[in-house]
Length: 359
Ligand code: IPM
Ligand code: MG
Image 1 (tube, rainbow, N blue to C red):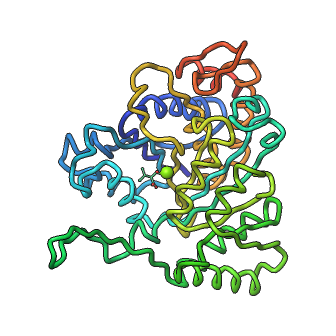
Image 2 (cartoon, rainbow, N blue to C red):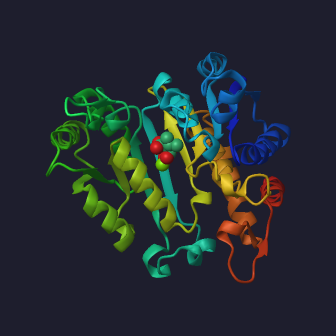
């Protein structure tokens, strides 16, 4: 059966990284029996420019109809002063929320070829393989009330609400335990239960799910400040991490940098039925737009996750991942992962190398 993929290139370097990833999809269709149909849509700042809405109704409809979404990036300084609901980021947040993409998987994997691209000592990061499972449709990103207001004394105030229900915690915990079971059978749940009620509930529910259905997995709990520190001190103590929306946003950027470049890291955002949106962890990188220097590998590796989690083509996922490894073995490096003797590859050369290595 033909699967429908919606491509949402978005802003900044989004179109450049999506273009390379589409070349990989084309090659898989041509030579390896992948059966998909591609469609494009508008999202982010460009969608706001053309329609006045960072997530036009038409895009949302296409997204609902698709089996999987390949997402580039959104945002840029020219839109930073818009009201919140018009900002490019709101388009992304609404997509996540409207499609119920509550489970965000962010692997931080160090390619041995890039061990010295990390700012941390090689012995601290070599062999690193962490999976961060971030809750994506709840917590302080979406909790009500949220507003800015002026009090009786004329002072400006703003409030956001970090809210989780037991059901939301239960379902993300199950996803994380399942993933841990297929990896190193160790799950660390990160919260701030020494201060926040919402974190105490988080800790309690994760513990209940563990006791009930996943007692074969080794579960630990850690406060988020300590987790941030441990990630840079001794990251290899972690296998799978589960945490809420805000903490996951922050910790996944830290974990990304351990691997040498945020330009290498893919992500998947899944709903209850493994329909998913796949996007690089890095953003729109307005400073390097249009120069042909952005690293397309995070997006190409996001395609690999799509093949694995939504399209049920583990064989092709493996093939894409090893093609990326082969391109690195050949000595190709985009600027972000550059070191001494390597050749600097452009975005197109890196994409082309992956396509060649698929053979
Ligand atoms: C991410 C990004 C987004 C987030 C922004 C662009 C809204 O930082 O995917 O991590 O905070 O979730
Ligand atoms: Mg982020």
